[in-house]
Amino acid sequence: MVDHRFPSLSSIRAFEAAARLGSFARAGQELGTSAASVSYHVRQLEAQIGVALFRRHPHRVELTEPGAVVAREAIDAFAGLRASFARAADMDEARLSLTALPTFGTSWLTPRLGRFRTRHPEISLDLDLSAVAEDLGAGRFDAAIRNGHGRWTGLRATRLMPSLFMPLCVPALKDAAAGLGDPRRSIEVPLLGRPDWWTLWYRALGFAEGPPPTSFGTSLATEHMDVAAALAGHGIAIASPILFRGEIDAGRLVPAHDLVASDGRAFWLAYPVARQRSRKIASFRDWLSDEAAEACAAGADFIRRAVAPQAA
Image (cartoon, rainbow, N blue to C red):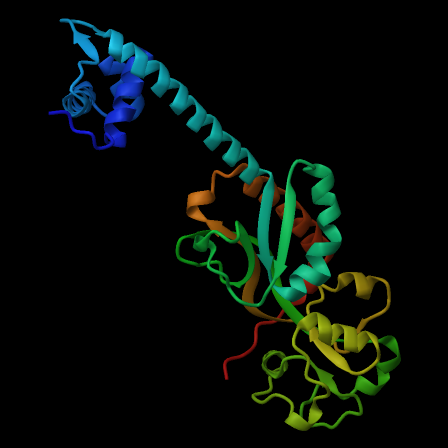
């Protein structure tokens, strides 16, 4: 009695390869298995449909007439599937989805993306800004800009630039910030930015404690918002002299103190190990590495002067 259940895909795949290549051995090589395994799956298929698909000779096989009819349909179907998968891969390679930290993405990356498009017009880029470390294995994002030490399970990471911070203010507030070097002294200008960064900066200066809560002005969500407030003259921001080098070079911001601190972390481009052969990721990684190297060269003095905070 003929089994009318749909044949297993493994058997159909073995039959299609054998029919197209005219050989169980060559089909086995293509499928990464043995000729015996291909023969077994074809026999399973023949038993299920109750039709002989191949005539087996001592050193070769040939399709039966029913086998030739099925072969034409199977080969066309698998060719269509291969073409569909190839089109899907091409579509995926044409669009890169990236998640980046808000300040890095807003202040440093976005103004440079036009250069990436010029170099790679074939790749469209979707940029999401989030402080959350998104799960890159979930498929929503191809890669991420992260801050840390570059060790994330299942990810490859390319180091871009060190994480530095120093006090920045508008030139008009430079004199008012003269007492900034001692957290015990009261200054007229409010501090902007994360209190923990200020504490680390003061530790790099040799103080065990950071500034008191009364030293702070408006609390904002991100570093680039702190810098925006500093540019408006609302206080002294603790921020990266590399990410905001453009504002420093233009004279819109000046260091309120010469000390540059580093906590040993860095910005990294991270992507899944499984995607390390992706052309679009490789193209973006190479371009971004060039941009980061240029930024590090321009900010070499800040990097050279960076001091690690002393232990609490």
